Image: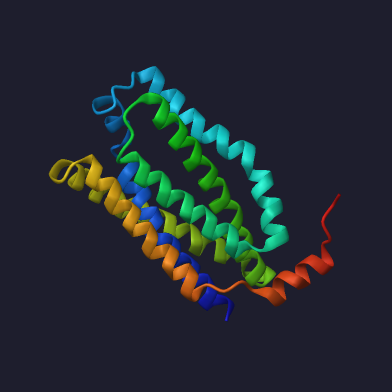
Length: 198
């Protein structure tokens, strides 16, 4: 059962990773050529994403301990959907900065919830293997994504690339909603053995 859940998580996250590879292969070009951000401003935009993720990671980790991994995973995917959708409509450097901050928070929520989910459902002797399987879904997404991103940006433009990416994430989000269930028994057992530190 735990392997089935593992594969479902990987399949659900894969569209997001493809979208990420699509977008990030051309995002700096978009910031510079379309919204007119300078090279220094592009650096600040990406800094906003990393700073947001660094600040929020412990918080979303605590939230996932309290309410479960699945709700946080869903929130992260909703955040990504909104962020990539907003990229299609931003018009200046400040808006890009804010959207990147939202995306950074979503990365933090994804990282915490997905890895914790896998740790919860996987026996200790298989955790390293399970993390590797999950990590492979990231790499596969970033193999396919950049190829699609460059092609789509050239042929349909940045805006429709971002919209297509958002639709991909919705596919993964729907998969989580329908097929990925919170492992309640494992979660409750984990909480009983490891009460929160106040």
